Image 1 (tube, rainbow, N blue to C red):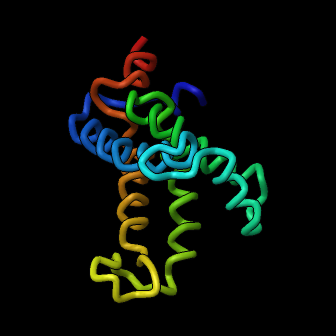
Image 2: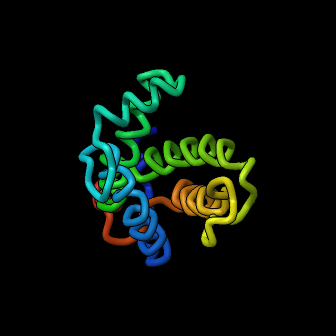
Image 3: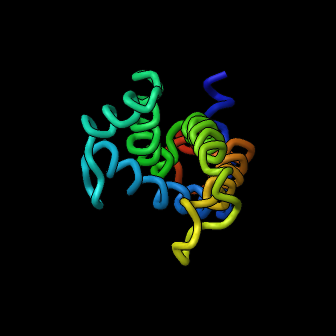
Length: 145
């Protein structure tokens, strides 16, 4: 089973998709974990999630997935696992944003952000779950040995 988790080919497309999602998600994780990019850091993020009714373990898993998980996706290590975790996170976030409609709030005219971003991340993650990490990945190095 572990071999199937790591199995990938030498796909340049999977590499591009992997790097793209990692570079988009990693700053969000850095906000939550380290307080970078205007974020509030681990303690405040945990407090926010748990005060909103999210169980502490799930809040911790969100922070872990968006920070460490995104970094591991960047390197292509256990990519399918972290892509699956991100898919679940984005499905929940999509549900939370559905009342705001589909589109992002570029003009500031909506009550909040729509769910188009979340849908794009889900699509990217599903592609990674199917294809694996692709070229220049730790998964590829480990599965080819």
